Length: 399
Image (tube, rainbow, N blue to C red; front, side):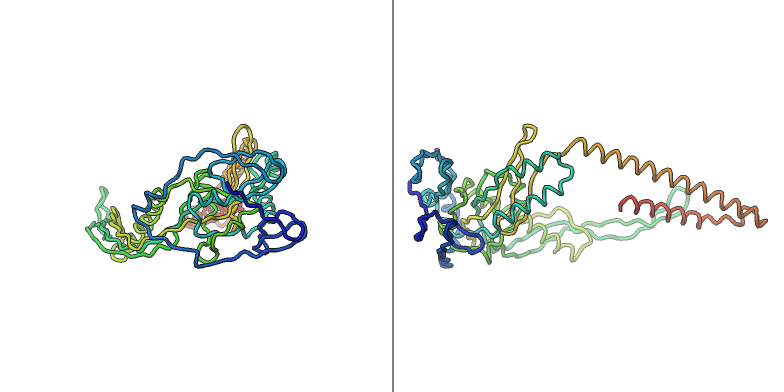
């Protein structure tokens, strides 16, 4: 296995990718080495079923790497392509292992540094006021790791025929049992069909199973159109990286599902141009000029254990968007429920008191002026004031 360490030509230190300068940088003497971005290497590959079958996930076993810094034997997981020696801290880029699968067509470099990510984590956890008090300290002691996650992107020009049922509303007068009539809306349904077209550009599908899909989707999307650069192993220096564990064929099926969800919505909108409602949409997409890319995207990750359960928080290494899971404190939830119950009870009491005062006021005015109660009792005004006071009570509760 070939391990790359990028030594500084000036002082001999190990150079790492620097987010601010987007280059290799020595942490000791600040020497920088530019990374070449060759846009011609970012290729959209033609997709077909034959190619999909040849690019599959290999069942690899862990391998042993000898650290060039201290000589230690380090176990490397099968999907890891950049690692750090746990004994001397030397950073390695396993370029040969990355290329043993397929060479990535491009990479989205980290744009957010670890200091900014730490600030993002602190703000995020401080706003999780339902979390236990100890949780903040767990985050502060946890290690934030930057890792490149494999993604597949897919393009397709799709012509999609559809059939559906469109509904048109009409008003009808219905006679009730007491002899009065009321107006109702009924819907007449008609079969309809049509065609929609859409070009899908860079539909993103994750290529790794190591992180929860819900968390990864929570920090998407990534700008793969303007900020994708040609792959170079130098970007991986100082960061972790993975090989893909989702095959091209499986990723393509997921991309088709994403496209078809949007195509159904486009069909629904097309039907709504002619009808009031739509149901039972069926589509028959025709995929043309399909292409794919294999890329790496940047993710910061941290994990912790609380009450014997594992929790993970992710940050988009390009935009800083954060998504995570965390435990909720039963004590804090109980306090909130108690406060809400007390507020509701108070509002009910105030509303009842206001109703009683209104009754007394109306009765008193009738007696003082000598008018009968019927002549001074304005039912519509009473109801309006009652509603007004109730609405004000609700606003106070919300605020």
